[in-house]
Length: 406
Image (cartoon, rainbow, N blue to C red; front, side, top):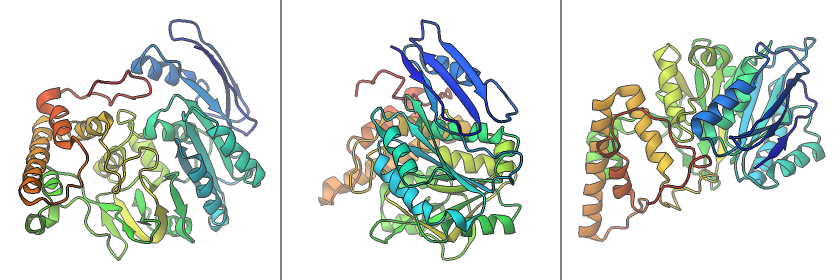
């Protein structure tokens, strides 16, 4: 198995790598057209590939990493978008950004095509070129899919290590549409509150209904309440509900969705980039949790609004409660073990399983419609710490791992 990757001419790291099967040699060449604090980036990819499996080659196609020349101002805002199987939505997102790109001077956009495996990279690049977005938007492609965390980090790492890293980074989902003033409102808020590390936008569904995006950290009680779905118990445990109604005013929250999350550069220097042990799911909770531990709070800024379709890359939506993939449960398990320890993780599993079991009993007795995902109770038990143990492990990347029998 062999593939060639190449780079465009935008200032930044330009890399060419011929990837062969892992048991064969790999020819790696690196050339720079701009200053970087660390020259050789290939060690990371080789180490990550080795850790994830030795039977699938990892290829990187860097079509451009936004970087300023020494004659330009520091980049104010770098918007990072990861595309996986939603090229048309990514292009729609970029079209909405085009109308807002000048609202924050010195803003650039970096898109990572994250191993979709079709012509997505070519289609996105064509849209960038045909619409004359090349002055502010660049594309990077990787293969295979590195998950939401790895796809974002492909952009974040070299940007952070450049001579003049952006002041702010905005993680923006590909299945979003940027409403007027969304960027400006976030940047103005961060400029006015230098002790805030992270801020999130308000979100709405395509029909205009509110999409909750101001969250509390999950706890054993919230796991119980969220699965039981009983109004009386939800009122009793109101202070532990993970996803309460969005506040009307700007305020501090526990965490916000990675669908539209602005991050101060200093936060990334303090705690690092996204934890790739997650692949996808719970990485935004984890990031905000660890930022708070070192003194960087997260705030909710309703003046910034995006439309978020949600679930388009994974296929898991409220209206389509398909069976959750193993990486969802593994990510949940990792979050509790990593940040709270074995006893707390066990209590969270107990709360989840008991709450869901009582809900299923209620459905069986009353005939109430069951909106939960298929096999959710069985899968939650199978992936609990009581079955899988208490050792902290990385979430398996399904692109690099053989499928597990259900």
